[in-house]
Length: 299
Image (cartoon, rainbow, N blue to C red; front, side):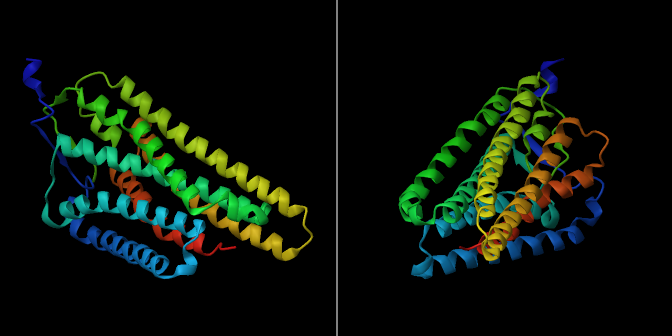
């Protein structure tokens, strides 16, 4: 009997419902989602085009901006392509292997996206607090190495998620009440013990974002401390604009991320459609905001 309730993970498929309770309105819901997605793509590709064509922008600051743009494009595309297939064509099936691959890619790119603002904050610190040494401290090769380290960190931290789930037996109930394969949403489809999966996912969410937020806060506190020693009101305003823009983007992005993570863990009382809509805003809202805020804080 127990065996009859399980399906081999390599042969089974999951069903992504989209937004539970609002299936009849999927076509209408797709309009704002696709509009945000198209605007995000156009804005990000425009930034890549301008930076690539303008030789004066081939600097570490704009290399970081391009990294951020690429993660934005990757993250939103990995989610919205499947979501729009659900909205427009009712294509809800996804293989378990495909689901685990999407889950790993989404979470790994999210960690990478969290890493880049830390490097940006360090860039702001060197620019404002030690401008004479900026050309030697942050060169293009150094920024590329930092980006590679961030990618390695993302892969190493997130690779255990699909590996742990691939060893789990999945039940006959294959319906995932979501628009994409989120870690805990997939883990709840298992008939086995997911204590380790639940604990690892929660620890990673707090360790990765917690550490990154601490480093960003440290950089900006050092910036503010250095600027307060200067009597120039222009310098004060410049530092304030830099810190405010970046901190607002980080808080907005992290709030939505933590909301999505914690509601999967503990938020049984939250309406599913509210949870899913806000979770998807995490992938759609930060891209244009983060790009514009960084461009607006040029030295």
